[in-house]
Length: 91
Image 1 (cartoon, rainbow, N blue to C red):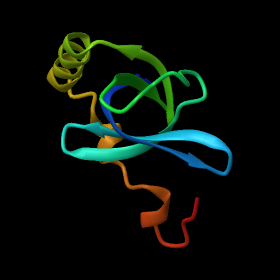
Image 2 (image 1 turned 60 degrees about the horizontal axis):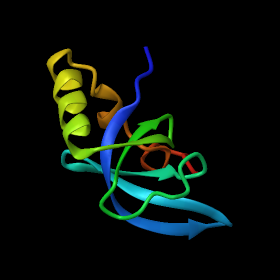
Image 3 (image 1 turned 180 degrees about the vertical axis):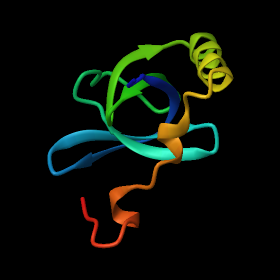
C-alpha cells in the first residue's frame, strides 16, 4: 500500500527547471517535487507521495497523520535507501 506521508518543508530550490523541496519527516529529510503545490514555502507542511508533494496541510493535521501512520507501522518507506545509496544507483 502506498501512502502520502506528511512532512515539513525545510528548503525550497530549483533543480533542472523544477521547483523542489527538502522535506523533513521526523529525523529523515528527502527531496520532493513541488509541481502540484507550487505555492508551497519553507515552513509549510505537505503530504508527499512517491516523491511528489500532493497537497499542503496544517501543522496539526500533519502531526495527527504522522502519528497515526507510526502507530500502524506504515513509515517503512522513509527507511528505504535512496537510489544514490545503492550499489550502481543514480538519480
